[in-house]
Length: 374
Image 1 (cartoon, rainbow, N blue to C red):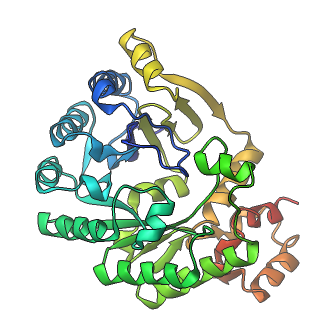
Image 2 (cartoon, rainbow, N blue to C red; image 1 turned 90 degrees about the horizontal axis):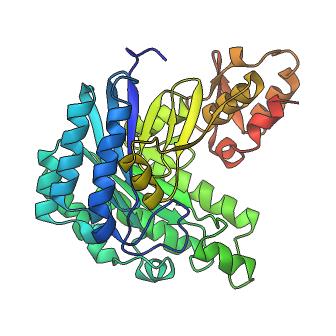
Image 3 (cartoon, rainbow, N blue to C red; image 1 turned 90 degrees about the vertical axis):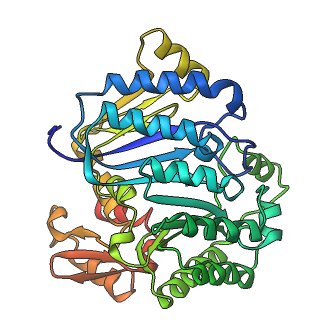
């Protein structure tokens, strides 16, 4: 890769107080005992990549639960990152936070460390829904946490919400959206609940103890979400993401969707240099042991074939309102009829040389790219 090209930096904090029943991301519930070893290992891993990437213009600290760490530990990590790597002057620095972890002292530490964006894991502003999702905070705590972020000086706040489970009706979901909009975050992420294998919800689904929504109900939730937030001034710029204006779109996540370079540090973190992709071991114990022994934490790697890269570019591009260039299609004449049908059915619209997915197109974002590979 070109070392002068800006890149994104992700740090995976692999600790949680309690594992959420829907979460498939790697995390451990023993932060107090493992955190010091993990921070030492993280600093060793930083040194391995000191000269490999160009300046970073985004830094995203996710998890897990980053705010489970102390303010001092978070400050130490960010300071060490700034010492080891080069950052752009206008770097976007995001930290994921849980409402129950938000307090004045920790927020002061984040501000002092240069954090300028917080992604708040609310999931719902309905206490029944929060109980179903086994979240540790209440709706009131979530609202108070948001107000504390504002009082601390954060002017770029994202709120994460979750929808589409059997204990939730559409009316209840729209009430949660309304309460989110009333707070006025710059960014809102709305994720449909998925039942991943190995999670508590995934196991309950396999045993028939819970059920998924019908495709029709899933579609109604998705389209109602898009209509509501667009009506209230949020741009639906990616399948699950809405921003009050373009500058508030997640610059870090846009790197993934635009297939731009990024470095991932920590257990299970993924990296991409523009051509090859690699990922770390999932176990925090293995991660710490390998790095303590002077070894790499990388567990696997891949380089896509030309056909795989083409499909990936289609899949990522058609997840965003930017869409794809008509020049990406190898033989436009071959797909003229398909494009006409997709346009007439409201799945895409064509503006200049761009094929842009509509909200209905976002609904079929997983299958839409495959239509251009037949």
